[in-house]
Length: 598
Image 1 (cartoon, helix red, strand yellow):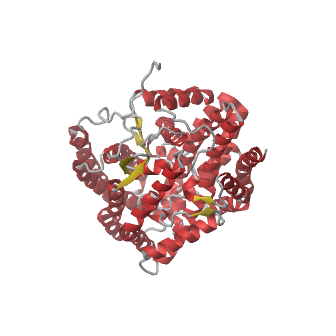
Image 2 (cartoon, rainbow, N blue to C red; image 1 turned 90 degrees about the vertical axis):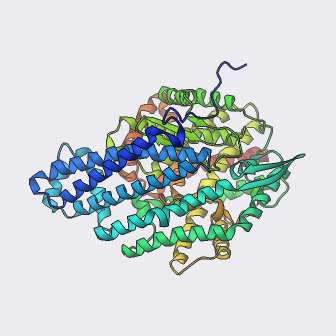
Image 3 (cartoon, rainbow, N blue to C red; image 1 turned 45 degrees about the vertical axis):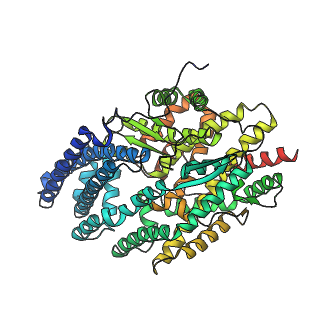
């Protein structure tokens, strides 16, 4: 009998009592409106400021923006959590509209400031970034000045910001609400159930082939029924994005995602080159697993199927204990943090139908906390999702020691911390394997993640790039979206997946993220980088934790190329760097195939 019971339902009242009716939350929103107004006033003055006051004013504006961002992040995260746990919370929807308006104003103000920085002559600029009080923001200031080069005039950018709330972000919000409202009726054994999309997706790893197949086709039927609405939402989001890019004189849709992720296109191309070079071994893995089930090719609904005897349930208490035990093997700080998160009700894991389908981690920088949201399904996949989201939360915790705007890090490195945590748990499970069958089961789970990052994520990248190219010419129909998705899947999986969902474009929420366009390559980047970091941790033992935390803390104040060079001494623009990570995954695939053969 367990001595400790970890809550499955999170505690949001500690952040803001009374949820969407919280007086404290409303006070923060009012405070933000005042602070943004003050910032806008400062920026009006900044246009005419005399040279001798520039240094002090730049520092004042930077600190003011940082203060706003911290409170705004707290408010946005809380509203996101409210709508995840109860998608039809009308009060939360209203608050989201207000927060979206404030978001648009602060983004507009930052662009105004960036344009102002661009107007500073080079001699004065050098004095600004070398000033001791601004030196910590040297990278950020240079980055903002560079971004200003692609912006429209201040007046036109302000107009874009006004339109973003109702004509851009609103479509992404509508998608999330729409997806959360969908119910799936499905026969499970002798019982007819009504499930959320998230609960139905969890069935892809069910031990019963018939249940997996039933769930797959139940979802396919829903996507087909609603494909026209999904197509409209996606076209509106991409159309708005492309129109802004056109006005800014940009043709390459990757310019802004790469800039936001602090990556060069040279690095991205090197990574995909390495991925494509080593795909054959993963094709062999898929074919081997298909043959175990009597098929020539891997059926898409069987991809997440467990093999061997380790398909038993892993209840939530056991999952938490396993994570704590193995985080402690990596380092004391990671274990300490995870224990605090579990005990203090930072995790929402309850399996119920009236909640969002999307797992996430929300940061609350004002109070130095995070919240993890998921639907725990008593299987290894849920255990790994839990570890993944805790990795995000640990990254947030590490950034508490960092000042102001340097706390904000790109998605590419965020996915490194999350997949690093997954790696710890998967390898721990492999080390504890008591039989060949157990080892095969866990290697299979590990390889699924490799295939997802090297094939599925690649298909998302290929689809999104091609879709945006065609969207420039006009509305892309649902039938054409299906064709584009199928083409991307065929290329990325090299024709090795039978019956892959053409509707992947409809049910993958990443395509509909208006704040993070092209949210795909970051996963592969994070996955391969985390493998390199994990290999280093195995070499150095527990003392590596301090190095790891230092890397995380630097993640908001330099490019990814400089970050990896500083902490690992590696050049990520080189294909060789990415090949090293690919080779580690290839070894797993070869071991799986050899164990099956023997």
